[in-house]
Image 1 (cartoon, helix red, strand yellow):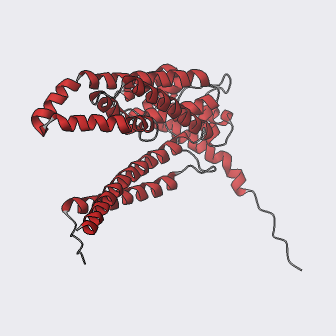
Image 2 (cartoon, one colour):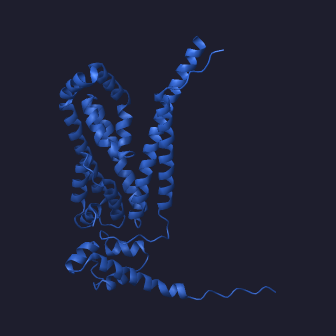
Image 3 (spheres, each protein chain N blue to C red):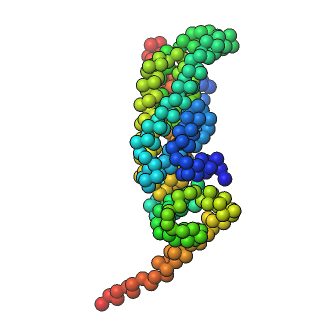
Length: 205
Length: 122
């Protein structure tokens, strides 16, 4: 019996404490099927086994708490990491560039990683801390993203309440579609930048 | 007229990344659409599922599933199959087979119901 099945069985029997614990641990970056559990919780809410409000509140709180651990671990370790990068990779400039990039794009990145590309969320927590992304902004985007994520997956569980296994299998595939499209968009953007610069150089010469 | 510069290895790498990521996205999109739950499709019975959930997802009365497992229908037992199997000292696979047989048997008459004869055209 897989770990996912064991956790789903525990959720069916013990309810919200299992969902809280799994969501918190998964937010730290330990690979647990928290999204599957959340969809199943939506199904249990629909069947009247779980209370909707408590499910939303406890899951969002667990996710936000787990994310704070990741952020502060990165933030406290940021001096050491900065020193390591300066010594090994070359220069604080790169670190400062990364910090500037995090400040510019960090908000949407944090928001979307909470529910769209959830596998990236623990890494973004850590890197936001390392890049000294302002804590107030991190907390804002984190809470917003986690609440939206909880609502989306509970609603999916509610709609597909008698087909939890099938919908989680399908969503697992769609997560890779999103990752593939993000990488494709990044490559296309870099290529467009290159071709624009090359054309400008040709016109200039 | 200015000649276009040949692409460097970084640009070829980006082109390869673009093509590869689009292929990955397309493959998983097809895979996901194939697995997307259809309303009449049955869920594969798993150990985490409770009897009411199995009955709902297979559109059969819960009493039928309880009877197949030798459990009373009232009060409704909401334990997952793996816990029921543990309590009955039986492997969960045995319970799943018993449920599948009961569901198949329940549906059998509707499959064998004769369809109305086609109207003959004048």
